[in-house]
Length: 333
Length: 307
Image (cartoon, rainbow over all chains, first blue to last red; front, side, top):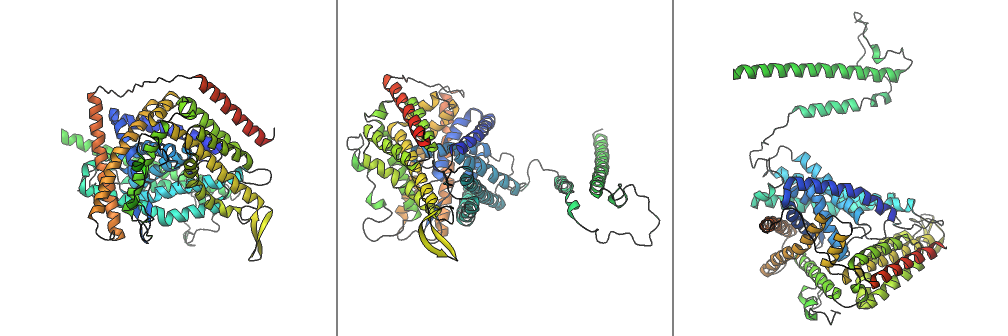
């Protein structure tokens, strides 16, 4: 997936250069803060490791071999920011010394393989391996899924970078000046190859290495997971279970405007014909404009309803907190 | 190989017959993952040693200040990427051949190194783009009809493919010129005195140094595996487990080595800051070179755009 020079226009390369500078700065700053003076040897050796992982041939059926990138693996082992720098360094050595990937296209390659891949893959890994013990098979599985999705995200970015070239850069006769394939061709080709083969190889290597380290070298896994328990599945700082409830509710609130698209009335929400005792609701029929501006009425009703529910929940939480605090103080006394 | 006057004897640079994946002796068969990894490792070593050898020869580009060389070759890369005519790209390509000759690189080797790998691969990739199915335009080579549509090679598609192949070849030639005529330490020093942050250079330099150290670990692991293999390499699953385990073990070694290197650095007074010795001096040749390259780039783009 290393883009050589000549496929991307210099404008595209400059854009990615501008995008990568803040990423490198942030990554360097973050890593330096976490590991202090140790970061130079750690990153240097991490980069060398990254280079070598890209060299490993992984056997696949039919007697052929493929090689993995290892961006997500390094992110799982050393953290996503260290991975940004380690993969970037490995890519620079490859570009300068082994002609693998272009020099002008270096920043674009870094964006795909050293930024998108580790960060996306690591996010997936964190999501799936939350509250899981360090030796749990689920953690290795999560790393594999992270590798699969991370590589495909990188392939997607590469395909988009290639695919926009013929539309943006062509001469008066319609000759594409750089990569000639359109998005409708690059996306299916790149994604098919990576979803079916390369992603699977990446996932297998990532799972294999994490599973091996779980069995054979647990201290090395602790570098990036200092707070995770080894085997009883309890994280030292349990997250409140309420988070998911909040996320679900927030999603529903964000999706409110979708209701405007629906036609007709909600099934089964009409009051029974005999129930004539309450006809004085504030926003009756989710509308106060008398049917003139139904969307405004609907959205206002949604806003008012959300605020009332939020206020009630907040009051409930505060009350529970107050009672709990009083009880703790009573115990202490 | 071709560097007969180099410090490294030629037989050491030759690829081993036993390691050849295409099977120079006996029937042709696919190399196993062990053989392929060993070959790639040997190739990395070979390229690094070879580059150090050619960088030590007294040629034109070797004599230039590395900072000047980095900046000018980068400028030439940009100029090449801006050129829109195949003929001008060909001119630029032949200029790189002349530079290779002036730098005492074997032209045959130089051409082989550039054309054997990436541009041919690039050619296969851009081949479909010559069809009118991908690149719309005037059909110059009709190939018949397909589902009632006329299919053929378009002049736009052919031009585009030629543009990409020549541009990729020229760009790679420029980068190869830089790497074959500049030793890694001088290249790092040049980057340091240009615009790259010092910490990044430090990481880069150490990464390159320990790359070979770790590479020998990999070679040991795989050679041991080969030595223990009697017939074929076993099932795909067991092979994958071996690769994963060797990558995992390698990470264990990497981390231990990083800790040791850090302690060694701290015990020698490392506080997180790096100092560098930079003793480059821009000479008359460098100034002439800069003027020449600038004129060449302006001419290249100027003629290309028809000024």
